[in-house]
Image (cartoon, rainbow, N blue to C red; front, side, top):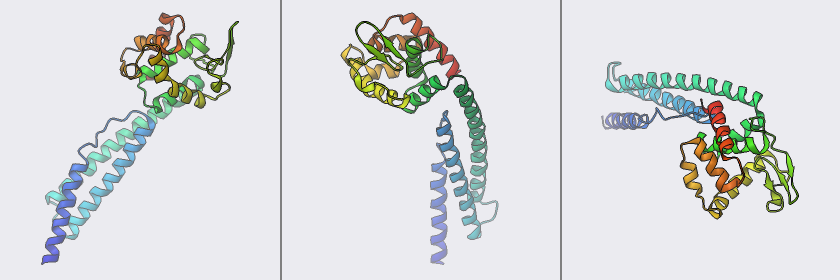
Length: 237
C-alpha cells in the first residue's frame, strides 16, 4: 500500500512539473537555429507527456483521469506548435536559399551579424554602410576589395585603412566580422558614440547614420541610410 502511494505521489509531482515546464512552450523564434531548438523542445515535451500518461495508466488511472487528459491535451498543443515551427523553418530556409543565391556576400554578412546578437535594424544599418563602401550602393558587395588614395590603402567591407588597421588585411568575411565586432565598441566610444545605444536603435536609417558617424567616419549619410532601408526591406520584410 505504501509503495502504491509513493508511486502515485511521484506521478502527481511529475505531472505538475510537466505542466509548468510547458508554460513557456510558445517562445518566440525567427531564425532557423532558433526554430530547430524549439522543434526539438516540442518533441522532448511530447515524449514527456506520453510518459506521464503511461505512468498514470500503469498505476490504474482511467482514461478520464485529469492526469491522462492533461497529458493528452498538452501533447496535442505541442504537436500543433511543432507543426507551426516546422512550417516556419521551411519558409526561413527557402528564404535564406534565395538570399544566398542572389546576394551571397551580403547575406553572409547578415547571417554572421545576426549570429552575434544584433537586431535586424542594426544589422541592416551596418549592411547599408557596407553597400556604400564596397557594393556601389547595392547588395552586390565585394568583401575583398581594396581601395586606394594618396594617403593609404583600404580593405574589406568597411574599407579599413591598412595604415591604422593592418591586421585586417586579407581577412575573410568571417575574419572581418570578428574584427568589426572586436573594434566597434572602442571605436564608437573614441568618436563620442555609444555601442549599447546603437544596438538599441529601432530606426534603420538613423542607425545607419549613427554607424557612419561613430565608426565608418565617411561621407554620404543620406545614401547610407537609404541603403539600410533597402537592406531591411529585403532581409526583414
